[in-house]
Every structure is written in C-alpha cells, then in structure tokens.
Image 1 (cartoon, protein in one colour):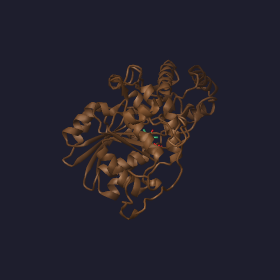
Image 2: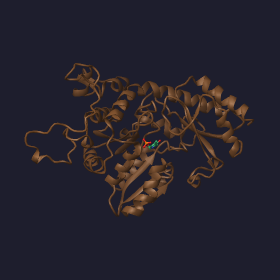
Image 3: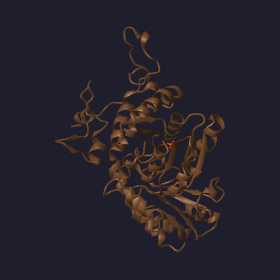
Image 4: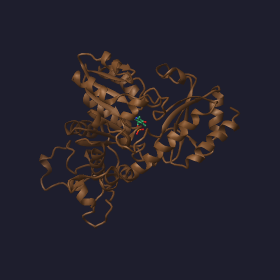
Length: 406
Ligand SMILES: *Cc1c(COP(=O)(O)O)cnc(C)c1O
C-alpha cells in the first residue's frame, strides 16, 4: 500500500482516498536497501558524483548532489504536502518565515507592488512593510483584507501579489479567499495565503483560488513542538524558481532530520486537528460566559464578525476553526500577567499547534496595536489550545481567574 500510494498517486479503483489515509501513507514507502517499511533519515551532506562530473549544473536541485540543493527527506515531505494542499508541487524550507521570504523575493521584483493583510505574522509585516521596500525598491500597501473592497481599492497597475493571512495572527480576522483570488486575478496578480492557523485539514486555499499556499510546518503540521519548517505549495513553475534561487543560493534548506520529524508528526494531523478544533470551540464558548472576559475572538463563534466566511471556507464536513483564539480580561496590565502566573496546565510561551496548550500576553504597548480592532487595545492573550483534556484546560482557566482575584 505505502509504496503504491507514494509512487502512483492518491486513489485506487477510481475512488479518491481520504485525508486520513493520505496523511498516513503519503511520504512513506519501503526502503529499497533494507525492506524497512519506514523511510530512513539520510543525513549525508554529499552524494557520489558520476564518472565525469564536469557538466553538472552545481545549482540544480533535482539530483542528489549536495544537501542544500535538495535531499530525499525533503522530497518525501514535499510530495505529501502537495497532495494534502491539492497543488501541483510543494517546496519545503527551513522555517515558516523562510517560506514567506522565499515567496516574496521570488514573486516580486524591483518596482512591483504588493497588497498585504494588516494583521500577519510579525516577520511578514517586517518584510513587506519595511525590508523589501527599503532595500529592494518594492512598493507595498497594508490593508484590512477581511473586507475585500479594501484589497480592490489598493490595487495599482504594478500590483503583482496579494498576500493574506487567514485567520490572522493574532487577531483571528478572517479573509474571504475566493473574493481575494478574484480581485488579484482580475489585476493580473497572484494570491498567496498563509494557511498556518487552519492547516490543510480545515481549509485548502488552493481549492478556493489561491495561487500560493504557505504553511509554517513548525505549528500544526509537525504538531509536536520540536522542529521548525515551512512549506510553499503552488505550481511547479514557481517551486522550481524557489528551489533554484532561494533554496540553493540564499540557502534556506530544511535539515533532513527536521524534514523527517515533520513527516512523522504530520501522520496524525487530521486526528489532532479534530481535537484542537473541538477543544478551542469549547473553551471559546466557555470564555464567552465569564463576566471577567471582555471579548473573545474565535472564528468558530457566531459572535465572530466573519463567522459565515469561515464556515463557507471549510474544506470538509468534519473540519473546524483551528486551535487558536484571542481574548482579553476586564483587568489591568498586571492582572493579565497575574492570571498567567496562576495557570498550572497551560504554559506561558510563544508558538502554537503544539501538543500542549500555550498562552502569550500581548500587552497594550505592542507596536502593531494601531492595526488591531479596538477591543485588543487594552492588551490581550493569544491562547493556542492543545490536546489536553478540555475539562482540565477549562478548570485551569477558572482556577487562575479566582487565584488572580479577577
Ligand atoms: C509561526 C508562524 C509563521 C512563522 O513560522 P516559523 O516556522 O516560526 O518561521 C508564519 N505564519 C504564521 C501564521 C505563524 O503562526
């Protein structure tokens, strides 16, 4: 089964295989040398050259040559992710931020213009708001993409890329991917979507018209909080350019060990996502009932301003809205910190998509506060709900509120 799936595709008897089956079998296969039904980690830096190596292109990425040019563990993971995202190809790099910068530097040239979401991962903001304009002469516009009219209004004759993050980190704003794709394509631009908060289990942007899908593999796809990686799932024409330029010449390759770990973690992606989705919704609903809670932002709540769009974008009947939510307490700066200090199960740390629940307090002096909705201005938490018993998580929150005197 494994080798047939890997080598021949994603269906048999003309019936497509389900997401669970694909998550388990793609990217694995029988090791030709030992017959092991788990692929090994190949840690070599270099590969044997042919008799006459003089006509090799030392920048090529499609032969085993040198590990920065591409390696087997990277390629197994890429083949799997392309199928899970429903794209022609995927390229896997050292981190989610490497995937973002590879996309921007590959698609955009000096004098081009890009429109991007006003809430994004901080590195996307830094790259598009500052580094690319100042160092490389790229024009950018930052807009609230949760209203597609704002994207349309920002388009210029030289717009080449619309980049959205949905749900956005950390405000959980949702953007309509189909509407954004239509506007981008009418303008002759590409749409890239940072899908990290959803993972391909919940939403598949390529099926909704996105040209480029970016994932921080560090989060849900690896799922165990022990390896960084990033992926760009798109057409082969674009992945080829990214490999040739960004991977080989800028050097953003993923290590074989991390590629192997992420491949292994991704086997349980659908199981884990169902639990993250269910637990986050239960916690969001519980928080909404508490008088000490000023607001809760979670796309699965009917109170979320873009709930209908979030529902419409779901990739399958058992999909949900991810494991991340934001909320604020009716207390001051120190009250928020006191609450975190009283938590016993939930850990105070950045990142998300891990097995354990993580919380971070983003205070009222965060440099991007002016871009956040009003209710975020007094400081708020980003809570990444993990896989613990949800009753324990709710008990932990209630207990910490009482202990902190809020
Ligand atoms: C974490 C994150 C990234 C960056 O990924 P790294 O693997 O940490 O480089 C990008 N986008 C989103 C939405 C993220 O949450």
